Length: 180
Ligand SMILES: [Zn+2]
Image (cartoon, protein in one colour):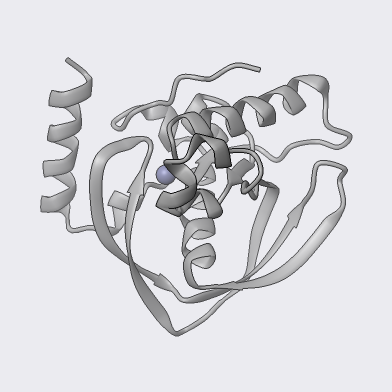
């Protein structure tokens, strides 16, 4: 297992549309998924999409339990209280008209948080690591987190939802802080 380098905005590789994974998963893809989980926990973050580590495949990992400060800041709890989810080739089948606003951040846009308004509920179809197909409705934080992660697979970032002025300010800040 290895912690991968996370690409930081602006980077053209974050703007590519990712390709579907093919089943059965190759050992390479299985290793990428393990590395993504390790990289997400190390960051720490609640989600990571493959394009963020320069892999243009439709893979995302999340752990929304990890969001709780109690779990994140107590090393003894790491492992037991994790809820790692792997999402392959995800596709939204439906999004609600009703919207919700949450403060979002992103490992590829460090130290930056902004309110983003998205559909409050979604119906998702995705595949697990064995190639099994699933369909389920999500609401609240997970609905938002999944939309954020799967935007990455389409080359989109949460800052795309902000005003051009705000987005440009963030891009300048990222260049200054992280691109030396
Ligand atoms: Zn992100």
